[in-house]
Image (cartoon, rainbow, N blue to C red; front, top):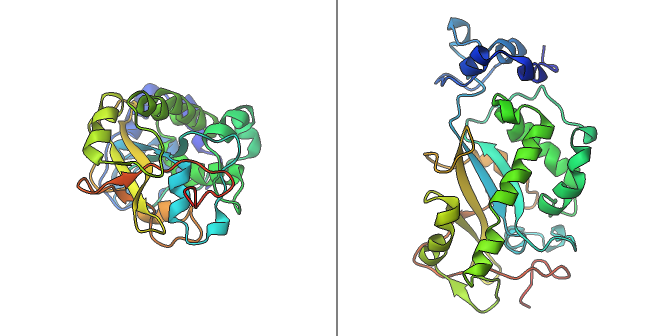
Amino acid sequence: MWCSVLPLLVGLAPAVLFLLQLPDHTDAQGVNCEDYKYGRQDSELHDKKHPCSWKCLLFTLQWPAGFCQFLNNESLCRIPENVNNWTIHGLWPLRGRSCCDCWPMFHSDVQELEAELTEYWPSLLKIKSSFHFWKDEWEKHGACAACVEGLNSPLRYFQISLKLRRQFDIHKVLEAAGVTPSCERAYKVPDVRQVLAPHLGDKHEIQCVKDHKDRQVWFQVKIPLSHNLTLGCDHHGNIDGELESRSYPGRTPPPGHPCPPEDPFYYLPIDHEQPQRPCD
């Protein structure tokens, strides 16, 4: 029964879609196709976690020059020539580790979006194609979001993600405020948050990694969203670290940590020739 049942969600009646979004607090294992199809919430699911028990998503943007800093192996990182801006890391429902793996994704699902995805959601790893990056994100996170009507197919999931990327054009916002990439100038979290808060809400998180000089380097921004993609959803903790770390060979712990508010951090420039050593 682990098959192509999730696409049936598109045709579900509003009442059933409502049931699919009711919270559940049971275990995260063993949800089968029938549960997704009919949104069961009775005693049959006592030991199962409902696929739409999550309340918040994180839309995460990464800065390519920062991404390259956390890889242990310098030869792994690449920044395509057409990439000179913030890119999408993912759109992640905040939930447990289990996710329906019964809806595979194929190249034809996103073929019409490929040019835009290649620019705004590229793989920054030499050993992973952009399509495999997208496929991983759909199977690990997108399928969990598919209980929401606007996200209930690979095409819709990636369309919404690209729309959010256009909405949250933080490069433009930062540049207008004089916050630009630099090898010499460092920034403070409160100052950058003040610039971003009117556009991302007060609950966004600025994340850093350490570079080879042991400096805090800006890596990504996490923007919490509710089911209906409005800003400011309350959430506790981080996205599942195990799922996040799987995307990054050459690095064992999950990437990124909140930039310490009292320490300066660097917003490094992009260097396509030396992506991990842009200031050398």
